[in-house]
Image (tube, rainbow, N blue to C red; front, side, top):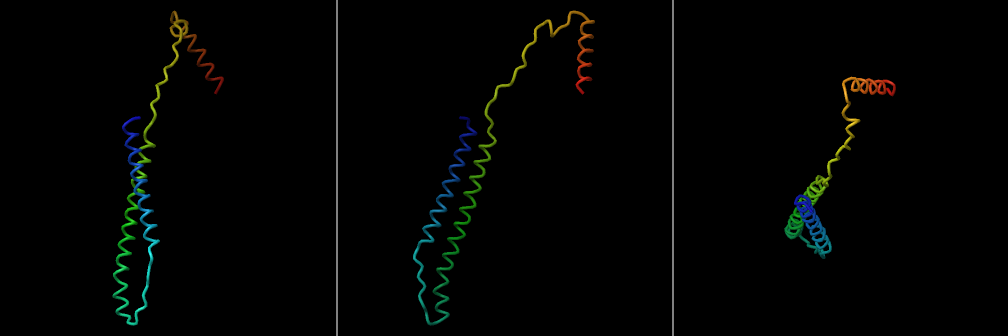
Length: 124
């Protein structure tokens, strides 16, 4: 395993762990017992409700940022893994025999070139 592949897997796992933590935290936040107490005075009710609303909005912003960062890290890990290319051996052309590769004299070379040109014209 190459170091690029290992780093891609580590980044991907970190992003997934952060996303799982975000979803667990959001689930625990949503399963909390919410109690709304009736208050006869509107100003007192607003004062009592403001603190929990601010706390809830801070938690929601925290969860949003945490999910955004987790998804970004996960995308970066996937990008790194997709850019790692497996090693391939370069294809070596088959060696031709000396009789085919090197004509014996100049006339044979011209004949061979002329035949190849005729074949190309006929096939086109």
